[in-house]
Length: 251
Image (cartoon, rainbow, N blue to C red):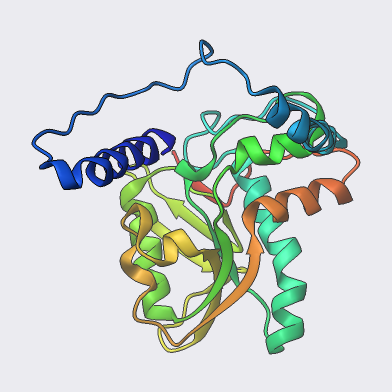
């Protein structure tokens, strides 16, 4: 971006200075931002205390991971994905219920949105930034059961461990849908369900086009990253596991 401003500025200077002398040529060159550039000490001195404070905050320990968790450790559900979906429910549901009087029925995030492992040992605020570097926020979509079934069909087709909560999907040996329930009950076509997700997926990210049209949308203005930070802060230790929320039955 700085290169662009430099080129624009250079062009304007040349244009202005040569305007009265019949400008006939403008040239530019790219100046790469590398370690070879000299440090402006006055600027460095100015930002130094802010950098120290930010690093201190990012490196503060807020929880402990009992093991190392990766989004690659699982076929249809993963421990880290389950933890993230559980965290969104645990942190978001009280806010949603206080505002609307309703309870979140299920949570859906995306497998690709998990951007880092959580290593065994101390969890810091920086951990949350590494896992979720994006600015996505929690939204709750009110959907009829027939739209929720489209969501289920997507998960069955995709067969990736997208983080889910409140929803259980069982596939047969041929990886076809055997059953899908929400909180242990069959999905009713005309019933309204409250589905927590993020604004990226609501807008069709990862081809999740089933969120629209819908009955209503509530934006909680709560970043997923902050959900994780608040969740970690509440937990002395995290020890998520792979469970039966999305499985294949083999007989």
